[in-house]
Structures are given as C-alpha cells and as structure tokens.
Length: 194
Ligand SMILES: [Mg+2]
Image (cartoon, rainbow, N blue to C red; front, side, top):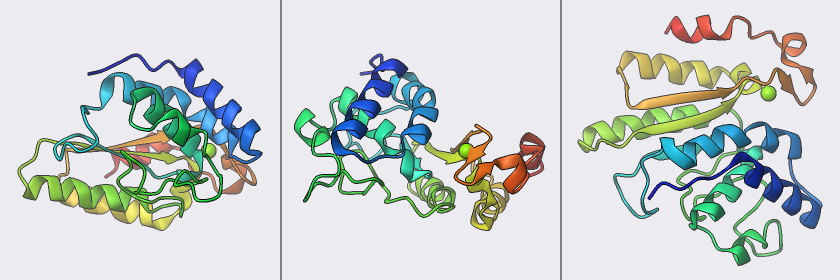
C-alpha cells in the first residue's frame, strides 16, 4: 500500500542517525532524499519485500544508504530498533547497503556496479516473464566509471525497457565539482545516444 514518505522525514532521520552514530555520508544522503521519497511513496510497485514480482531498487551510490534506511523504516520494512542499530557492532545496517537488510537485493558501495546488476536483473525479469521493473540510482560522478557505460550498451542492445536509471545530477563529488574533476557535460545527450 503506497504511503506518503515526505523528504523532510527522510532528512530528519539522516541527521539523527549520523549524529547518533558519528558516521555517515550526510551530504550525499541528503542529496538523494527527494528521489528516494518519490520512489518509495508512489513510483515503486512494492507491497512486501518478499513479493518476487515487486519492483527492484538498486542504490548504486551505496554511500547514500541512510536515505534508503529511512525509507525502509518509514515503509515498515525495518524496525525502529534496527534503524537505531545503524553502524553498531553486529548490525546489518552499515555505511553501505547489504542484501541481508529487508528490501535490499544487492550489496553496493563499489561505484559503477549498480547498473550492471540492474541490467542483469532486468534481463532476468524478462526471462521469468515478470512485469517487475528495475530502478537504479546512480550519482553523477559515478558515471566516471566505465562499467556504467558498458551496462548502458548492454541494456540498449537488449532493449531493456524495464530498466530505469536515475542520476543524482548534483554536480559535486568527493574531490570537487564534477565539471572540474571529469566533465560529464552534456549528460542527457550522452545517455540519449544509447
Ligand atoms: Mg555527485
């Protein structure tokens, strides 16, 4: 059942958990809050984490995971106790997502791997004649990775219309502005070319 997951609620949890655990990629997580809120409020067709035909979501920029934990908590897929275990000893909730977390299908964190995972998952859905879709969220700087473009070529070749890539085009990365580190402009045209 869709429910309203407002971006301010996600941002509040990101700040609370980062403060409590003294760890977290705060800026990156805040940057994807609106995207995650939209996905988990109304875009993703998801009822239960155990439904084999639910849409898949892959957080390729895994370091933003606090936003995802917040959405999974607000969705009721992880408990408050689990949320509050973020980055504690023995917790599944670390600084990058693990597939052991309810609703997380792929471990991510090594940048450039989410879209290849997603292309495979989209092809698998076709083979299984499932209507499920695969959404992949990437950071803009992650598009520096060659594996992203290999996956785009693969997806275009196989006409994977059930694969949706979303890029958080915030223009920033760890070492500075993306336009200065490795210019990605014009991003839209690059993707359209495939
Ligand atoms: Mg960025």
